[in-house]
Length: 576
Image (cartoon, rainbow, N blue to C red):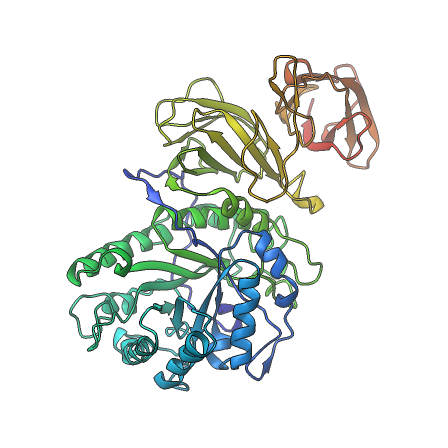
């Protein structure tokens, strides 16, 4: 992992660009795509790290991770003991996840015969039948290697020795610290002197999955950098497209088809390998809300490009803000926004990836589709703009006057409209006819700042629960139609800034005429205005004309009467 030493930052900072994809065919989502890294454990080999990973396996399972990589610099430098390998494997499988095991190399400190012994002990002696093995870690960083020849020199004998013990395993590499074409190109040139995509003398493939690591930044990035990075020129999206072309050529050249076809993986990934010293929810690193949205978008880039699995680094680590780059905070144990964004996608993205487009440069959209459901993820990365939005489930022109218009290429001629806060993420699930059956909302203001999980609501009979946060029940009217509870409602305030008069809009119809308390506070917490409303037609106009109110920022608070926990707040700027 790169936070253990300085790393060359290979890519340029990019300006924010509109997210748009134009894939012509659906890309299947692998069942083991959503991965994590087993870091930080208590110890590896004889080295003590005093990590808390062993206390977090339940939360890792709840995040819906499916594959866990036991790798990185530490288990490459210090070979784990046999006991540690088996303990890690059993801990992962006890929670229904599948391990990926790295064998050490560390600049010839360990040999091919030792790698073979690890495979033999784990799979033959102990019968754990591990499918995926990685050889070494970040040769272009920790080893200082600069050429494909240096990597092929150890990779080939290691792979041959390991597959001689168990020919059924799949081998992953070279694990470059970034998309290092100086190394990867030579390793993936069919028939070249350093080609690892073909077979050894025994007819066994050296490598089955070509891998590299991806960290967007080093902690010095701006918010605009984070928003625009992934689809900028020569970055992750372009890198994966380039690699896919090379893989396709290698598969054709070596006649690799079916289960023998080469695949790709990004086995370490995050918004950065370290944070700024003051990173927090409002920052741009791993602790931030926009950093978590980066992770979600990064996962979508992997899905779009057919990556076999993408493993986030990491679960829990760090004794200071700069090194606190896990999705669980090591001090408080709180789940970060990165955890919830990962969970929202891992629990709901199935079937085929489908592309999305947005007419707002700071809003990203993408989705997935099975024969039963279409899932749409929307990331509003705008700091202040709350949007009335319309999602259309095909590529036809979006109707209406919503400021935010989204197309998702699901071939369903249906539109859905709603309201979305600035700095928020929303996941929508539609049935085969295009009716909304589930909505998950996760906002900076209503969730992250209070360390609350996303709000999940079901509609129209609901959808099979994916064991995330638990759905909110609905009631039924006299015609058998679902009536949505006011639990977990969202609000939009417009215009904002406003001159004496503004409108508060709910994201749903108040079908049961529940009394809602409307309050306006100044930033000192003093109540300036209050009224009760049932929000007829979802809206309530607040008219402050004639009141002696200073130009300032105020807090609008909407609360269900009698329920102190069902409350939403939003800032509004009043000017004269």
